[in-house]
Amino acid sequence: MSSASTSRAMLKTLSVVKKVKMGKRVEKILKDKGGSTSAQDNGDDDPNKTPEPYICTGIFEADFTEFCRRNLLKDNEIPAVVIRPKPPCAQAPPDNKSKDSKDSNASKDPTPDEGVDAANQEEAPPKTYVTKDKYAYFRPVVQVEMENEDKPTTVTEIYIRGWKVDSLMVGIFKQCWPIIEKLSVVNLWNVNLSEDVVKEFASFLPQCQNLKTLVIDGTWCPEEPWSLLIGEDSLLTSLSLRNNGITDKGAVMIGKALSTVKSSNKNLVSLNLSGNKITDVGAVAIANGLRMNRVLLSLSLANNNVSDEGAKKLGEVLSRFPLTHEEVVERRKLLSEKGSPDQGLLKSPPPSRRDRDRPGSVRSSSHMDKTDKKRDKSSKKKDTKRSDKDKDDARSNRSSADGRKGEKEDGKSSKTDAKKDKDDTTKGKKEDKWKKASFVADTMSTKTSKGKKTSSKDKRVPESDSPEILEAINPLLEQVESMDNQLWIPGNRCLINLNLSRNKITDTGMKGLLLAVQYQITLLNLAPSPAMKGILRMSLTGNDVKKTDETYVKLQEVLLARDPYYKPPEKGGGDNQSLAG
Image (tube, rainbow, N blue to C red):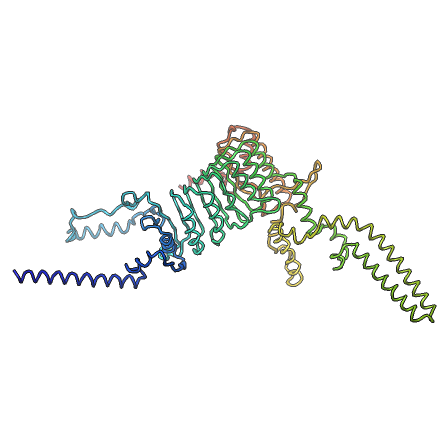
């Protein structure tokens, strides 16, 4: 009995020693891998200890998890970063040659393989779906797509589905996303954003240099601050705000973000506002945003509440429209900056530096100073040299003549001072004030025009080889037409895709859209422009108009001829197909 008890005691001591050794090995492995031991965990739990600053590695999963832990989120509360599931690829059909070879081998060797038990064979799991644990499907995850799944630094797209993104989570994204070099798409659906969260998104999204596409669908926000996402600093080229409950309040702000008299969005190419609650008021505001915008190519207002008034306004902006008083004033200021073309035809010599910097009244006083100096010199000479009376008389006559000339010039300058003072008050410091208000397209056109001059002198490059940046000019500087005491300019011909399907447009609104398309075609025939081709596609299905309506049918025929994706059926195609078959 004593020997048995001693053997048991020895076994217990050996097991304890093994556990201690295993614990030391685990701690050593964790240290080698950069993990934290229990002592370190206890030290990290110390509230007085300040954590060391974390440097992002560019690996989204590691950075996101670390920032979540530093914000005191538990492991079961941290959303998992997973690769976005893709539909299964279609399997290639089996090769007939391989089938024949297998059949021939089977005929040669009819005996079954040894060691294969048909009863124990298990079928491979299907690849059309993936099973998960209970409630795991409803846990928040962050789905990503990569260029190369073996390289975690190549994240290109991020998808978030069906869970709330609060201020804490957007603060973590603010630290992680700008470090991802290849991030180009962010897609959010039903994420319940607040106004502060949208403002935070708008503040740091421009820091993501390659982020061009932003999708926020199915997310309602009562304040509707969506216009902040397309501000002047925005680098987005595509924005989707479908099914967000946007009303006329949000549409008005979006229209102002597209363009005003003095500013315009310069990067947004596609805007999708389908499935919202925009009426004619919002459609008119968005149409006003297209007046000075020459960058947007695609606009979708499908499945809204737009009727004839909104359709007419869109047709007016697409054809031609009169300038408002504010736009006329801005046009005059821009023309005064560039200089009117009439001044170039007169070929007047450029004013001197003093004439540009000083008004006319100052120039007249300078003439007075000259005459006064001459008079002082003549009086001094009279006192010193009284013997030479003839010379003194001649000099005095000259000085008096100069004084009379100065007085005449003063009279002329005093008359012109009023006009010049008026011009100076209206112009002021034009170069400092209004260069910032002009569009980038205008500045680019002036740069290219300067580049033409230098290239024609040095390299002698013909004008036809110059880039077509000159096409993108400020709309206010286009040729105007005076009618009914108003200045009319051509409308927006850069928008090529307009979706107005499933609205409340009748035949009255269709007439306005038809006139706009016909005007664009006429203008394009008179002055072809590869940069401004006008509307090429327009979706109008599902409106309050019959398909047999004359205006609707004519509009569809005109649009069908301009659709770049439409291919007319070839004549005799059926005979050729039958012969080929």
